[in-house]
Length: 118
Image (cartoon, rainbow, N blue to C red):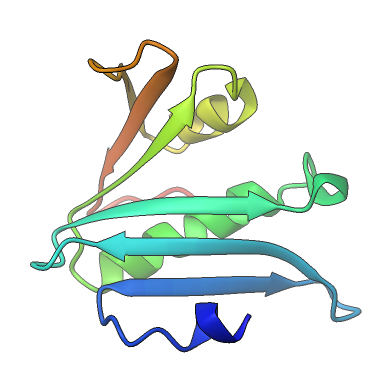
């Protein structure tokens, strides 16, 4: 946790989500390019907290944070098998494309701006 919360890189932002009883239930990283225009997001949710809306809320929070800080596009690389994550991202306005170098992966991207869901 210390390494995630004390990054010296101004383009890397880490987020921690806790339950009301203090349990760490999710982590997210937003890593932006040097110009802070494009950011890659990665989220990990505890298995017992999946399908409860945590991913939706957390991704929405990270997207709003990125938008508030001038990042124009956020993206993520997903395994094609991770259908739940891909569907959630589609519902949040991400565009899904096949990774040209690896057919087992997809790239999901979302332009940020005026209307962010959640």
